[in-house]
Structure formats: structure tokens, C-alpha cells
Amino acid sequence: MHLVCPRCRKKHKPKKGKYLCDCGSALLVEYKKLKWKPDGKGVWRYQSCLPHKGRHYSLEEGGTPLVKGLDRKAYYKLEGDNPTGSFKDRGTSVVVSRAVAEGFKVVSTASTGNMGASVAAYAAYANIKSRVFVPTDTPTNKLSQIIAYDAELVRVRGSYHDAVERLWNDIVRGSYLAMTGLNPYYIEGEKTIGYELYEDMGAPDKIIVPMGTGGLITAIHKAFVELKQMKKVRKLPEMIGVQPKNCAPIAAAWKEGLDRAERMTKCSTIASAIMVKTPFNDLTALNAMRESKGEAVTVSEAAIKKAVRGLGKEGIFAEPAAATTLAGYEKIDKKKSDKIALIISGSGLKDPSAAL
Ligand SMILES: Cc1ncc(COP(=O)(O)O)c(C=O)c1O
Ligand SMILES: [Zn+2]
Image (cartoon, rainbow, N blue to C red; front, side, top):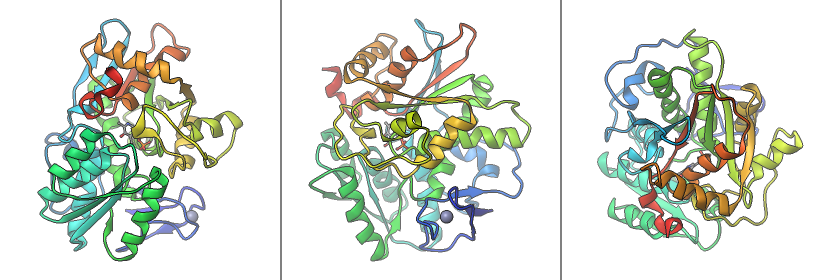
């Protein structure tokens, strides 16, 4: 196993405290040869395809339900059923296990709320400290969660981008960088969503994913690329990435045919979990959509609110960021025969204001 840079293709040996390529890009894990040997349950069922082999810290993440919609011909992957209520737990279990193995006593993250709650919970379980930098406007429920899990909560006045800048200073002082987009082991844990979809429904024709930094769509696409390498699937599901119209740097780059997203100066959306002006995984997210013949779509604030209600009518309570997938579903061209999976990435209880 080694790390590879998706931008300059340079290969790296994993090294303590080194997270990015010399060119500044986030890295991905690459395996010499993958073996498909699912065994057990949840994320660690796929240990043969994960980078961490030693002791792991698990709160029984993963193994989430796949529910067939009533009104629509869609399948909902309910990631809100993870221990802290979002898909982040899959990556955090791998990342915190790795941090402990590398001898770190503190893990730090910058977060729009969900990753902070997840990192705080897993650090508590592994008996190490956590520090969480959050921007202004982080929903109260997520702040309560972070505090309840005993993290040091640092409220940064400004955007997610400002919280990330504060985080970097903290990393330089020696804490472990527990953050999607920048730590390649996050993508590894999160990709198990793709493995579960494959086991539960075969390869979907399309997978609809909310995009913030672009890590989640990168991860699910990576799972199917690996399943193809292992000769489990013949074709890649079309990856459809969704962003709110009001905060859509990756979708804008897609529209322009660019490889990289440009930084947005202003963002404002009720889907606070994906309110990201500078997406770190833009290159790999754009590649996931291109390589799979998918697309990026944008959705209005009104459509997101409608989608929260629409999912509610089918018995599913999703936070606004997660409901963007339904808004995206309503917008895309599809065939009657298409098998479509929507990644309902976080629970509605985390940010209930949109339903009100
Ligand atoms: C509920 C929810 N959905 C989707 C995303 C998007 O994931 P990514 O930032 O990896 O693109 C996030 C990220 O925080 C999230 O919390
Ligand atoms: Zn590089």
C-alpha cells in the first residue's frame, strides 16, 4: 500500500505527520493488489480492502440500511443511522485507529459540524483528546454533540475556510489531522458505502451524492473502481454530484469543463454541512463524475426545503445537505429502468430547522 497524488502522480510511502503531496494536493491510498474478502459487519467487514490492519476503534459504524422508496424508483442509503448520525463515522473509525497506532494523543479537525461530532466521539472512545474548529452558523445540535463527546470546541468567527486555517496552526504544533479532504484514510473508510451498495443491490446505474469538499463522491467512486479492478462489477455507476446553487464551486468547474474548482468568495445555504468555498477534493470529485460519465447538478434553496419534506413523506428525516440528493434526483434525466441510489448522508435531527 502507498499514497499517490492525483495531481502530479507522485507516489509516497506513508510517513508520520505527512498528509499532503509536495505539490500541495490531497493524496489517495493505492493498493498493489486488492482482495475481496468481506467478513463480519460494518466498515471493518472490508478490512482486506482497508489500509489499517492493527487494533481498530469501532462504534459499530457502517452496515446502514438501504431502503427502497415508495413514491420514486430510488434507493435511499441511510447514513444518518451511523453512531453519530452521519457517514463521517466510517472514515473516522479508520482515521482515529491510525492516529492511535502512530502514537498521537490529540486529534484535530475543522468541521461544519458532522465531522467534528464524529471525531469527538471516536477520540473519546479511543481515550485520546480531540479539538474541533467550527465556523459561525454551525447548527446548535451539532455543537451540543461535540461538547457532549468531551471535545475541546473552538468557535472560529468566519467561514469553514477560516476554521481550516486555524486548524493548520494546531497541526503544526503536533496534533493529528483528522479531516476528510486532507487525510487520505478518511476516503478509505467512506468508500465502504460503495461496497455496501454493491453487496445490497449490485452496481446502481446512478449514485447521487451531496458534495462539500468532494471527498464523499471521490470515496464512493473509488469503491467501484476497486470493485471493477477486482472483477466484481463490469461498469462504473454514473456519479451525480449535487451542490446548492448558492455554494457550488465544484459544479461551476464542471460546467466550465475545468479540472479544478475556483474559490468562491460568498456562500450561503441552508445545507450548512456542504457550505464549502474551497473544496480540497475538487480534482478527484470532478474526475469521479467524468470517468463514470456522470454529472454535477445544482439545486435551489427552495428545492432543498421541498426535498426535506419529500423525504419526510417517505418516512425519512434528512438534514438539508443530505436532502439535496432528492432535489438532484428530481432534476436529472433518467430512464424508467435505472437503479438509482441516493446517499442520505446525515440525520435530520442534526439540523432540524429546515423542516420547520
Ligand atoms: C451531511 C453531509 N453530507 C455531505 C457532505 C459532503 O461530503 P464531502 O465534504 O466529503 O464532499 C458532508 C460533509 O460534511 C455532510 O456533513
Ligand atoms: Zn502531487
